[in-house]
Image (cartoon, rainbow, N blue to C red):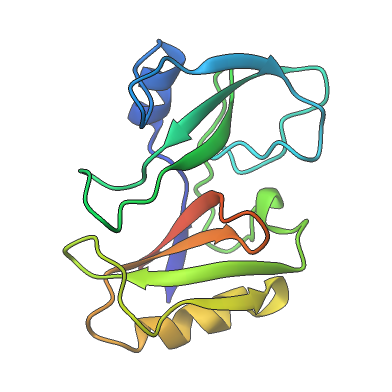
Length: 155
């Protein structure tokens, strides 16, 4: 089996304290418009009217050709990290499709693993990618905008 992993709490706390984002800038503060703003820590939608952080996130330990960077949202106020492996988080239920792709232990994309999959088949598609021994983890991204949502790890 596998589990959906949200951004680590320590990293989110650092961003809330003003740590630089993937481009070296402090996170911007904005007001959520509701359903279009999924927090990458609690993996729920930031309620309309609530303050949020907007920043460039690089979900890789260092820069390299496959280290994609893109915009993400975070609740500005503390929130509980999504931890329930048995429940598909709210932030992954709004879109009909998601882009998923596998990465090796070297944090580089494993060719042949990228697929746009229906949300209802997300776990099954991830299981198929994990059938490959060279895949260490999977990213879940927007099928429309390529925005990073979460990571899938082997359980």
